[in-house]
Image (cartoon, rainbow, N blue to C red):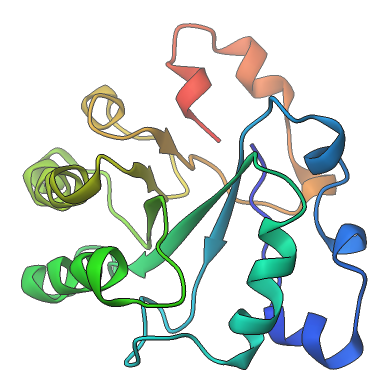
Length: 181
């Protein structure tokens, strides 16, 4: 899986054809799962609906194919954000938004130390209790094996596509690489 960062407002402002921005494989690979991470405000934002950029573009993107899973974004501040705030963001995504309901949560700016495993387990349990949703963790670095047991997907490296070393996945088959992105 590749994570593509794009501001939806750009699509609205210059009327880019969404199929030019979205990976071309979305419509030609109907059995491959794609994850669309939405980030209205480093979390769900203060309103029950996202801004016009989201309300304009999301229906069009989601209509491209049924293999797109909408995922809500939450920044954890490398575990510095208050636990109750993160739990409130999860609840907002799952229950209070009227325009869209994500099928999972993407936790960004995460740490992956053994000391923080219980904190992230609390977040994951909240997501799964409410909806059994997909959970993605983004520390951007290698993680302890114990993190793979609680997450569906883990972003273990971040780089520009042209600078990425995709050979590492094949060279490290002992890792749970199918969960790493």
